[in-house]
Length: 65
Image (tube, rainbow, N blue to C red; front, side, top):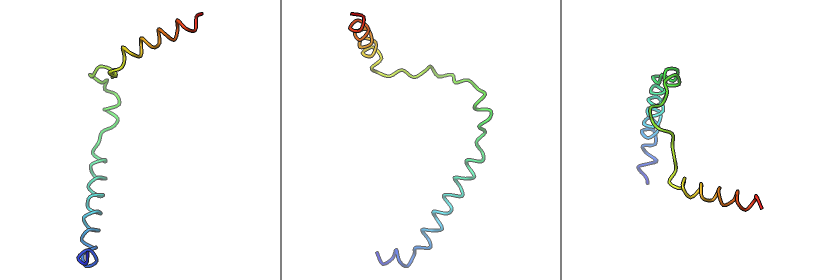
């Protein structure tokens, strides 16, 4: 780990470069047009949807009594 003490400044320069490139990439994102466009993907449905429906029906039957 002696090399880390000698070359800490190289690691710092790399990290600063990564942060600057990330900020540049975020400036290129056009969020206004992406908010206007509707998603062409169907709404998300989890794998337990059928089980949830059965549990809801059972819960409604038990509470009606």
